[in-house]
Length: 332
Length: 268
Image (tube, rainbow over all chains, first blue to last red):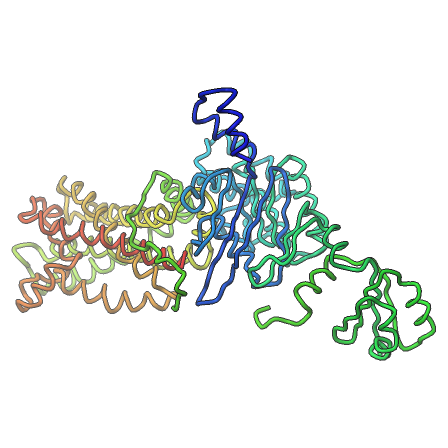
């Protein structure tokens, strides 16, 4: 409400310096705001009227299938792609006009590692720090701390080629932190990692959130989104199709229980018991029953020998599949 | 590439905005080079040395004097320009392409507060510095072999730095257009190699028909030879304004076009 605040200021405080207005505005405005963003490639809308906000210290998850426009949106936020329409403001700075200024306070982890193969881990951090114009002393002080944060102390002298996938991603994250950013843009930070490496990464990201850093995270792992994000935006074909907290979204769009049925008898089971569920979907040999109360269905199918069942609470994956559909995309 | 009607025309040819932020990028390349400096330097000197020995002493014995100079001095004063040209071109094509396309180094730098204008300028500057290192090493060889021992050799070095910048700028244009390393072979065999024969490196331009001499007058390498040859011999260049203008024009326009094409490549 900048208008209301402005009115109070002018009537009660009287004349005030310019910076006071700027300060008040930055205190009340979100850290990150994207409004009505549009981008076309080859006549196709890849980002369509997308609006996002992130408050200081918040983790916003952007989830969507491959080709949904997640990476393009991030690149527009960094001033690397010019939007066809819409506005982007980070720390109150307009992007792309003030992208260079804004990037001083942003850390980026791209989808594919772009570590410098000619440098070892410590040198990678040092050289990246020099791109921010940081004083040598500041860099020297931060590098060992970041190596420790990334659990790479013993690898300081190793080159990226000698690191595992998880280590490379953690080094990328450490590199993104060299300028002590207020906002992190993470593009699928755990894609391609094994379970241990993913859990270690999640732990580190949670630690960063506790430090008060804001995070914009794109992912297509729903468990990742559920663990880390305060708020989620589901996008498909560049358009926002749902927004809310992970639990809130599930409650809003789905029945609380899911019974998955596999096996030869699954298809027959679906036709026989469809009326016991609020919604039935099948994908390949699996039938998904979405229900408010699973007991009647479970009792009805308990004696069947030609199926196996799994009873579980509804999760983000169900939400995502409901909103984005189960069919495989050409570009997936 | 088809663009939709809503796409505003990207300002590809907007004036370059170069800042001091480019310097860490130059330093990055210098740091990498330092790790491989010795083998790289040996490679840089070996080829010009072979050319000097083979053509200079071998062919020189048959040719005798050219333009009133011992042939080896004539050749050395031209081939130092040629080596500078090749050093800068290699760096701004093969190496810059590795950093831009293969290693994604430029992409990660763009996530820091450094603009593409700075990165392309830094690559040009670095290729110029690297070619100057080569030129300095060759000048050292000339002194050691006693081919040229004039103090004016020192004045040739800043000119050779400009020559390096010029060829780096041109190479960056082709770098911005390249889909793979193969593309650069065309530039080397169809542009640079013919240019060495048209620019008075091996024989005087005056040996060629008039129309070829007119072509040579606007080639950056012949401009380089015209400025550098007298300095290596120990004389002031007779004509300096035009060749200097040719080099500066290629460097300036080359950088600008390279930047525009690189912007198109990165920002679409």
